[in-house]
Length: 252
Image (cartoon, rainbow, N blue to C red; front, side, top):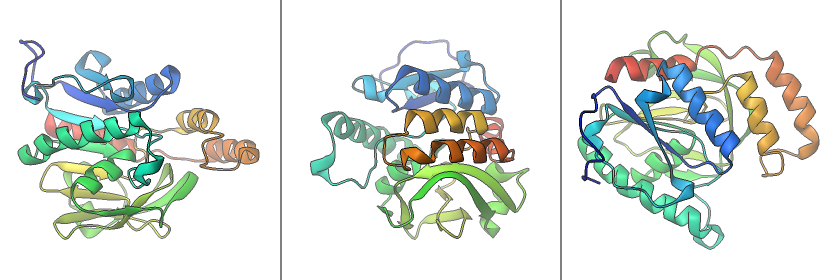
Protein backbone atom coordinates (compact mmCIF):
# COMPACT_ATOMS: atom_id res chain seq x y z
CA UNK A 1 0.00 0.00 0.00
CA UNK A 2 2.97 2.30 0.33
CA UNK A 3 4.03 2.84 -3.28
CA UNK A 4 3.22 6.37 -4.42
CA UNK A 5 1.13 6.89 -7.54
CA UNK A 6 2.73 10.26 -8.22
CA UNK A 7 4.02 13.41 -6.59
CA UNK A 8 2.93 16.97 -6.10
CA UNK A 9 -0.54 16.15 -4.77
CA UNK A 10 -1.91 18.46 -2.06
CA UNK A 11 -2.84 16.87 1.26
CA UNK A 12 -6.42 18.11 0.83
CA UNK A 13 -7.17 15.35 -1.66
CA UNK A 14 -9.47 12.53 -0.61
CA UNK A 15 -9.84 8.93 -1.79
CA UNK A 16 -13.15 7.22 -2.52
CA UNK A 17 -13.31 3.42 -2.51
CA UNK A 18 -16.39 2.19 -4.40
CA UNK A 19 -17.81 -1.31 -4.70
CA UNK A 20 -20.98 -0.85 -6.77
CA UNK A 21 -21.25 -2.68 -10.08
CA UNK A 22 -22.97 -0.76 -12.86
CA UNK A 23 -21.50 2.47 -14.17
CA UNK A 24 -24.56 4.70 -13.75
CA UNK A 25 -25.28 3.85 -10.11
CA UNK A 26 -21.58 3.85 -9.20
CA UNK A 27 -21.08 7.25 -10.83
CA UNK A 28 -24.18 8.67 -9.14
CA UNK A 29 -22.93 7.62 -5.70
CA UNK A 30 -19.47 9.07 -6.29
CA UNK A 31 -20.85 12.36 -7.62
CA UNK A 32 -23.30 12.67 -4.71
CA UNK A 33 -20.53 12.17 -2.17
CA UNK A 34 -18.37 14.78 -3.89
CA UNK A 35 -21.33 17.18 -4.08
CA UNK A 36 -22.35 16.98 -0.44
CA UNK A 37 -18.76 16.89 0.76
CA UNK A 38 -18.23 20.15 -1.11
CA UNK A 39 -15.41 18.71 -3.21
CA UNK A 40 -14.89 18.86 -6.97
CA UNK A 41 -14.21 15.45 -8.46
CA UNK A 42 -10.67 16.69 -9.15
CA UNK A 43 -10.02 16.46 -5.39
CA UNK A 44 -11.62 13.04 -4.86
CA UNK A 45 -9.70 10.18 -6.45
CA UNK A 46 -11.77 7.05 -7.03
CA UNK A 47 -10.98 3.35 -7.03
CA UNK A 48 -13.73 0.91 -8.05
CA UNK A 49 -12.86 -2.27 -6.22
CA UNK A 50 -15.52 -4.36 -7.95
CA UNK A 51 -13.74 -3.81 -11.27
CA UNK A 52 -10.37 -5.23 -10.28
CA UNK A 53 -7.79 -5.74 -7.53
CA UNK A 54 -6.83 -2.83 -5.31
CA UNK A 55 -4.01 -0.87 -6.95
CA UNK A 56 -1.03 0.27 -4.94
CA UNK A 57 -2.16 3.27 -2.91
CA UNK A 58 0.02 5.75 -1.09
CA UNK A 59 -2.17 6.92 1.78
CA UNK A 60 0.22 9.79 2.44
CA UNK A 61 -1.33 11.47 -0.60
CA UNK A 62 -4.72 11.79 1.07
CA UNK A 63 -6.34 13.72 3.88
CA UNK A 64 -8.98 11.01 4.30
CA UNK A 65 -10.72 7.98 2.82
CA UNK A 66 -14.45 7.56 2.14
CA UNK A 67 -16.35 4.45 1.13
CA UNK A 68 -20.03 4.15 0.26
CA UNK A 69 -22.66 1.44 0.05
CA UNK A 70 -22.42 -1.94 -1.62
CA UNK A 71 -24.46 -4.89 -2.84
CA UNK A 72 -22.09 -7.03 -0.72
CA UNK A 73 -22.88 -8.10 2.84
CA UNK A 74 -19.97 -8.78 5.15
CA UNK A 75 -22.05 -11.23 7.20
CA UNK A 76 -22.97 -13.50 4.27
CA UNK A 77 -21.74 -17.10 4.64
CA UNK A 78 -18.49 -17.62 2.78
CA UNK A 79 -20.19 -20.22 0.57
CA UNK A 80 -22.56 -17.51 -0.72
CA UNK A 81 -19.87 -14.95 -1.50
CA UNK A 82 -18.74 -14.59 -5.10
CA UNK A 83 -15.08 -14.56 -6.04
CA UNK A 84 -15.37 -10.79 -6.60
CA UNK A 85 -16.89 -10.21 -3.17
CA UNK A 86 -14.19 -12.23 -1.46
CA UNK A 87 -11.49 -10.28 -3.28
CA UNK A 88 -13.11 -6.95 -2.41
CA UNK A 89 -13.36 -7.93 1.26
CA UNK A 90 -9.72 -9.02 1.34
CA UNK A 91 -8.62 -5.75 -0.28
CA UNK A 92 -10.75 -3.67 2.10
CA UNK A 93 -9.40 -5.53 5.11
CA UNK A 94 -5.82 -5.00 3.97
CA UNK A 95 -6.15 -1.26 3.47
CA UNK A 96 -8.11 -0.94 6.73
CA UNK A 97 -5.13 -2.52 8.51
CA UNK A 98 -3.10 0.52 7.50
CA UNK A 99 -5.88 3.09 7.91
CA UNK A 100 -6.70 1.90 11.44
CA UNK A 101 -3.04 1.66 12.45
CA UNK A 102 -2.58 5.29 11.38
CA UNK A 103 -5.94 6.37 12.83
CA UNK A 104 -6.35 7.97 9.42
CA UNK A 105 -9.59 9.87 8.77
CA UNK A 106 -12.07 7.33 7.37
CA UNK A 107 -15.80 7.60 6.75
CA UNK A 108 -17.70 4.52 5.66
CA UNK A 109 -21.37 4.88 4.72
CA UNK A 110 -23.50 1.73 5.03
CA UNK A 111 -20.96 -0.80 3.74
CA UNK A 112 -18.50 1.01 5.98
CA UNK A 113 -20.38 -0.41 8.96
CA UNK A 114 -19.84 -3.94 7.68
CA UNK A 115 -16.21 -3.40 6.72
CA UNK A 116 -14.93 -1.26 9.59
CA UNK A 117 -17.22 -3.01 12.06
CA UNK A 118 -16.05 -6.48 11.07
CA UNK A 119 -12.43 -5.34 11.01
CA UNK A 120 -12.77 -4.08 14.58
CA UNK A 121 -14.55 -7.12 15.97
CA UNK A 122 -18.17 -5.94 15.95
CA UNK A 123 -20.92 -8.52 15.62
CA UNK A 124 -22.44 -7.84 12.19
CA UNK A 125 -25.49 -9.87 11.16
CA UNK A 126 -29.05 -9.51 9.85
CA UNK A 127 -30.74 -8.90 13.19
CA UNK A 128 -31.29 -5.18 12.56
CA UNK A 129 -31.64 -4.94 8.80
CA UNK A 130 -34.00 -2.21 7.56
CA UNK A 131 -35.98 -1.82 4.31
CA UNK A 132 -35.24 1.17 2.07
CA UNK A 133 -36.81 4.40 3.19
CA UNK A 134 -36.59 7.05 5.86
CA UNK A 135 -35.19 6.31 9.31
CA UNK A 136 -35.48 8.44 12.44
CA UNK A 137 -31.99 8.89 13.86
CA UNK A 138 -31.02 10.20 17.32
CA UNK A 139 -27.58 11.36 18.39
CA UNK A 140 -26.10 10.02 21.62
CA UNK A 141 -24.34 12.31 24.09
CA UNK A 142 -21.06 11.36 22.43
CA UNK A 143 -22.57 12.13 19.03
CA UNK A 144 -23.70 15.57 20.08
CA UNK A 145 -20.11 16.32 21.11
CA UNK A 146 -18.46 14.85 18.02
CA UNK A 147 -17.04 17.20 15.35
CA UNK A 148 -18.59 15.20 12.50
CA UNK A 149 -22.05 15.82 13.95
CA UNK A 150 -21.73 19.59 14.30
CA UNK A 151 -24.82 21.26 12.85
CA UNK A 152 -27.03 18.19 13.21
CA UNK A 153 -30.14 18.35 15.38
CA UNK A 154 -30.41 15.81 18.18
CA UNK A 155 -33.01 13.96 16.10
CA UNK A 156 -33.15 13.88 12.30
CA UNK A 157 -34.35 11.80 9.38
CA UNK A 158 -32.01 9.91 7.06
CA UNK A 159 -32.34 7.60 4.09
CA UNK A 160 -31.26 4.02 4.61
CA UNK A 161 -31.76 0.45 3.45
CA UNK A 162 -29.58 -2.46 4.50
CA UNK A 163 -29.73 -6.20 5.02
CA UNK A 164 -27.11 -6.32 7.78
CA UNK A 165 -26.08 -4.09 10.68
CA UNK A 166 -23.99 -4.06 13.82
CA UNK A 167 -25.68 -6.06 16.56
CA UNK A 168 -22.90 -5.53 19.08
CA UNK A 169 -20.12 -2.96 19.03
CA UNK A 170 -16.68 -3.75 20.45
CA UNK A 171 -15.96 -2.04 23.76
CA UNK A 172 -13.45 0.37 22.21
CA UNK A 173 -15.97 1.79 19.71
CA UNK A 174 -18.05 4.88 20.54
CA UNK A 175 -21.74 4.92 19.63
CA UNK A 176 -22.63 8.27 18.06
CA UNK A 177 -26.16 7.74 16.71
CA UNK A 178 -28.93 5.22 17.20
CA UNK A 179 -32.54 4.40 16.30
CA UNK A 180 -35.28 2.10 17.52
CA UNK A 181 -35.17 -0.38 14.63
CA UNK A 182 -31.35 -0.35 14.41
CA UNK A 183 -29.42 0.50 17.59
CA UNK A 184 -26.08 1.23 15.87
CA UNK A 185 -26.54 3.95 13.26
CA UNK A 186 -23.16 5.67 13.60
CA UNK A 187 -19.99 4.90 15.51
CA UNK A 188 -16.38 5.98 15.86
CA UNK A 189 -13.21 4.00 16.44
CA UNK A 190 -10.14 5.74 17.88
CA UNK A 191 -10.30 9.46 17.06
CA UNK A 192 -10.80 9.58 13.28
CA UNK A 193 -12.47 6.37 12.04
CA UNK A 194 -16.21 6.66 11.40
CA UNK A 195 -19.03 4.57 9.98
CA UNK A 196 -22.71 5.35 9.41
CA UNK A 197 -25.45 2.81 8.76
CA UNK A 198 -27.60 5.44 7.04
CA UNK A 199 -26.56 7.17 3.81
CA UNK A 200 -25.33 10.77 4.29
CA UNK A 201 -24.92 11.14 0.52
CA UNK A 202 -28.53 10.39 -0.40
CA UNK A 203 -31.29 12.81 -1.26
CA UNK A 204 -34.70 11.75 -2.59
CA UNK A 205 -33.47 11.61 -6.19
CA UNK A 206 -30.54 9.43 -5.19
CA UNK A 207 -32.73 7.08 -3.18
CA UNK A 208 -35.14 6.64 -6.08
CA UNK A 209 -32.22 5.78 -8.38
CA UNK A 210 -31.11 3.13 -5.88
CA UNK A 211 -34.64 1.75 -5.56
CA UNK A 212 -34.85 1.32 -9.32
CA UNK A 213 -31.38 -0.22 -9.56
CA UNK A 214 -31.91 -2.72 -6.73
CA UNK A 215 -35.58 -3.49 -7.30
CA UNK A 216 -34.82 -7.21 -7.65
CA UNK A 217 -31.95 -7.41 -5.16
CA UNK A 218 -33.99 -8.54 -2.16
CA UNK A 219 -34.14 -5.26 -0.24
CA UNK A 220 -37.89 -4.93 -0.84
CA UNK A 221 -40.64 -6.61 -2.86
CA UNK A 222 -40.59 -5.28 -6.44
CA UNK A 223 -44.28 -4.37 -6.20
CA UNK A 224 -43.41 -1.83 -3.50
CA UNK A 225 -41.35 0.36 -5.84
CA UNK A 226 -44.12 2.89 -6.56
CA UNK A 227 -44.98 3.29 -2.87
CA UNK A 228 -41.34 3.69 -1.85
CA UNK A 229 -40.82 6.23 -4.64
CA UNK A 230 -43.78 8.32 -3.41
CA UNK A 231 -42.49 8.17 0.15
CA UNK A 232 -39.02 9.24 -0.96
CA UNK A 233 -40.44 12.24 -2.81
CA UNK A 234 -42.47 13.23 0.25
CA UNK A 235 -39.53 12.93 2.65
CA UNK A 236 -37.55 15.87 3.95
CA UNK A 237 -34.06 14.50 4.50
CA UNK A 238 -31.76 17.51 4.72
CA UNK A 239 -29.45 16.99 7.71
CA UNK A 240 -27.29 13.84 7.21
CA UNK A 241 -25.38 15.41 4.31
CA UNK A 242 -23.76 17.72 6.87
CA UNK A 243 -21.63 14.77 7.99
CA UNK A 244 -19.84 14.65 4.63
CA UNK A 245 -19.29 18.40 4.69
CA UNK A 246 -17.96 18.20 8.25
CA UNK A 247 -15.62 15.33 7.38
CA UNK A 248 -13.94 17.39 4.68
CA UNK A 249 -13.87 20.60 6.73
CA UNK A 250 -12.37 18.84 9.75
CA UNK A 251 -9.69 16.91 7.89
CA UNK A 252 -8.82 18.90 4.77
